[in-house]
Image (tube, rainbow, N blue to C red; front, top):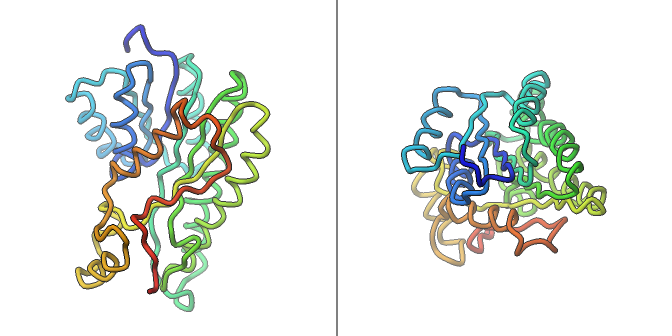
Length: 251
């Protein structure tokens, strides 16, 4: 770790996709220690190695399942050992569950709830306590366009992402006087493992329904998230920012 660092950015789901892209962008800032969090140790170490190989030295990793309270507690202890203020936090972890509601079992609803909603609440609670000490910080939740636009077969997933919008607005109101900002980013169809299973025919239809005529890249979402960490976004809070290329699902 270099002597110039003065703050921490924490990223869940950092072993791949949008989370990894955010880590790479954040690591460009030499004053920032990037803490990459994911539950798969092997993938997480491999992802961190990419950044280290690229010459970024201020990178740490912590393996944790963010749906397990005890592991979240250990994550916060790890963060506090670094003895630097946490300025940025983004919650990218989570899977996309697809099934008609009539065929969805209770335990799968619970699984999605713990991944997307309860974990966001518990992580934000702990992170905001740390940020409050310095009266500064930026929290970003990853939502989805389906939270507002809907999508066939994604009722449960959409419901969980919709919950993040309420959390974003309410938490922004609660934390504003401490200069802690809370926003959500709602990606459209992004070229990650989450959409790898979508048949080409459906992908082409989605591209047709997207104003920019293409699928997005993780780096394009990461750019917006890192903007929300930057000083230039200091007056933005309580917002859900769509990064979807103009996608209109269901057309």
